[in-house]
Image (cartoon, rainbow, N blue to C red; front, top):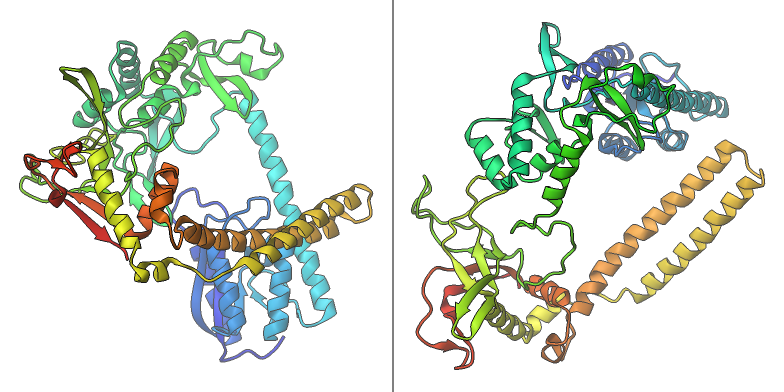
Length: 547
C-alpha cells in the first residue's frame, strides 16, 4: 500500500434495497469507512450516498452519485477513494474498467473496509481486481435468477407479491417497535376499505362519474392506501395526502387482484388451486393464479365496470382515442381573472385555460363554438381556477397569430432564433451511426459463430452501445436546434402559415411567446378585425414575449 496519510478522501456508500426507507445500511457503511479513513490518516472531504440503488448492469439504474464520485476523483477533488467492498462500487465488469482507468490516471487505487486492496497500477493488481469484479457480477446474476424463480413460485402458490399495500387488504395485526410501523397481514381484508370499494362499484354501475365519486370521497376524508407515506418523484420526497383523483379510482376498481379467480382451463396440478375457492387473482406477467386473499368482485362485475369506464368521454381527457391538437395556444393561455368565491376571493386567478367548445342554439340552428375557458375543477375534485373567464378561441388565435407574424418581421428575433449551421456534423453522425449498427450486427453474428467468449462479447457490445447512445444524444441535440431554424423561415413566414400544420404553427408561437393572458371583460360593441369577424376586444389579451 501507498502512504496516503494527510490526503483528501471521498467515501462512496451504497445499498441496493432499502425497504424501510431509513438509510440504515448506508449509515453503517459510512461509519465503518470513516474508521478506515482514520486508520489510513486521510481526511474525508465528501460522502457520496446511493441509497436504494443497484450497481448491477442488469438493473440499469441511473447512478448520479457514483458518476459524481468518479468525476471528482479523476479531476482531483479528492485523492483517495474509499468504499465498504468492491461490490459497493460496482457489480458491472464494464464499469469496473472505469475504476481501473481512473486509478491508473490518478495513481492511487481504492481502499476498502472488507475487500482486499488491489494495486490497479500493476498487472497483477488489475488481474485480481477484475477477478473480484467478475465474481461480483456473477453474484448479482445469481441473485437475480434466484429472486425470479422465487417470485414465480410465490405466484403459483397465490402469495402476495410484496411492495405497496393494495387498497382493501393489509389488516393491522400488530406493531413493530424496532421499525416503528404497523405489522399488516396482506391476506386479510380491511372491512372499511372493502366497503368503500363496494360503494365505488355500485355507484359506477349506477352511472355516477369518476369525478362525482372522488369529489365525494375526498370531502368525506376517505383516503387511498398511500396516505401518509413518503413518495419519491424526480429526487424529491413528499408525504402523500392520500386524495383520490380521476384515473386513480378507475385503476383501483379495475385492479385484477380483486376478481374472484375462475379456474376454468387452469392446470389442475397448479398449487394455487389449493387456496380457498373465493380467492382473488394473483398476476405474474401473463400468468393468472388463484390468490390466498379473498376476491371482492366477480368477473362479470369487473367487466361491467370496465365497459362503463371505457365508454365515457370526460371533458378533460381523450379516453380511448388519440386526438390531434385542435387549439393553437394549448398550454400557454393563462386566466387573468379573479376569484369570486372560496377563501381566495378577490385574488388573481392565474389558472391555465383549456380548449372547451360549446354548442349554442341560434336562429340558424345549433352552432359549435371553440372557446378557451378557465377550468374550474381538478381531477381530484378540488378547485383549480376561478372559471369566470371565457373567450372565443378563433378570435384569440387570429389576434395572437397576427402579433407573432409581426414580431417575426423584427431582425433581432430572427438573429436570436437562427442557430449555427451543423450540416457537416449531422452528416458525420449519420454515417457513424450506420457504421456502428453494422458493427453491432457483425459482432452478434461473430458471437453466434463462437468467435468470442461471453465476457469479451459483453465488453465489446457494451462499448458499441455506449457509442450509439452518445451519437444518438448528440444527433437529438442537433435535430432540436435544426428544427428550430426549420420552423422559422428567414422570409415568407406569412405565405406558409395558413397551409402549415397546427403543430408546426404552435411550435413557432412558443419560440417567441411565453404565455397569453386573457383578462376578464365584455368585448366592445364592434366586430374585430372587421364586420365579418368576432365580438372581440384585443385589449383584453396580453402577450408575454420571450424575444
